[in-house]
Amino acid sequence: MLYIKTIFILLTKTNSILSRTIEKVTGDCYTHVSISLNRELTQMYSFGRKKKSNPFIGGFVHESIQNGIYALNQEAECMLFSLDVTEKAYENINNMICDIHSNKEQYKYNFIGLFNVLLGWNVRRKKRYFCSEFVTEVLQYANTIEWDKPPALTKPSDFQNMPELSIVFEGKLRLVA
Image (cartoon, rainbow, N blue to C red):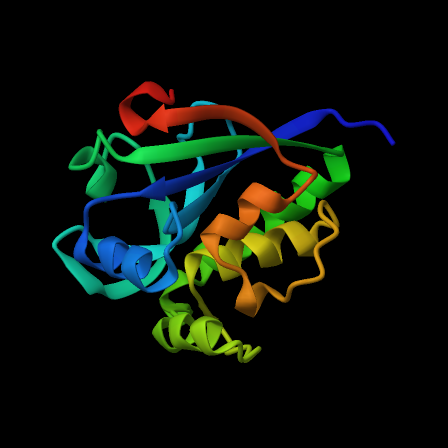
């Protein structure tokens, strides 16, 4: 198999109330995950807050480490992974992201899914995602990972245990790019 493209997975933990709550409940180091189609992290996508001042308005987001919640959290801890993929897998990832982006008003943040993860309930809600559920589903859709855990039960910290991912950087967000 010829790997000719690289995508990136960014784990973060900001000082937001939601992030601190998730950390307290799960005990995990990282509370958010995004997928990026480039190393500069300018084509970075996830499900999260749409407005930096309101964590309860969420959905599909095009993120940047220079804007939004990250602009306020440059000292946040992060971990960046790379994943080499085939041209076809990259195309599938890009197509899925573009399809969701084109219909983003139909997609919502899966707040109920956060509780389902804690309870171990594998419940898939149509057109609703939380960050790790979205990124896992994208990677599985493109056949880039072999992961037995369903997307609806995947937490950001689980990405640290995916053998296909290679660590690129670990440290402060302001130093990642």
